[in-house]
Length: 250
Image 1 (cartoon, rainbow, N blue to C red):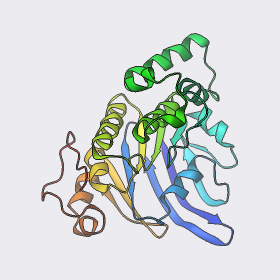
Image 2: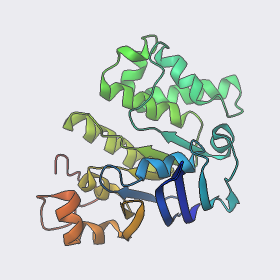
Image 3: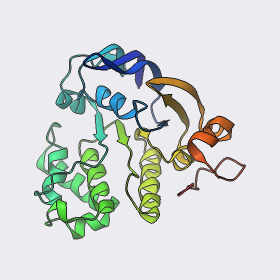
Image 4: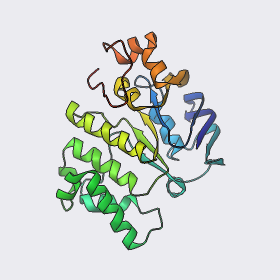
């Protein structure tokens, strides 16, 4: 579904991502792990059209994304949940959700169905539907950001640091939601510093360091890799996690 070939991303003369190649098949959940400054968020911004200075190839369902504005990329089937959530604080929860479907042609009836689906997925959003989004808790804002992205009915959902700044209980809820979306057939690419939790729900993963992929493999293989454990997972059980478990706080 998604293929990157030797992608390089630049901020002026600075190369932030240097020769990254990776692929994501339909229905997969693929994690990209790495330290701060490794180029993870830059890579996501490039895929979604927010950063236009890049070389190489980015293909979505075989078609190049080069030169497309973010709105066209959304309409083609890619939605992003950005780092830090970036909800529209003065607007209501309902208006934030409606904005998520702005680039997608839908009937009013279809939009109502999607709104109802988001309320079922995150019941707290239904309770807060008329409340300004900026008054929500951090966890509620993250749920809103995910719901807003899903309103575009994406084939590929890109999640950038969904656990950042959240309490362990809320992190577990968010990761269980991600796993549920994957079971419903949504293809997901996840950037996450909580490597243990990310690998617990992933099919495959890539390790990014200083803008380059230094390791890739199945989630189980990466979890068992001593270098990955020492650098990104820390003190964890010796056995790789089952799909239904989450290593929150690892």
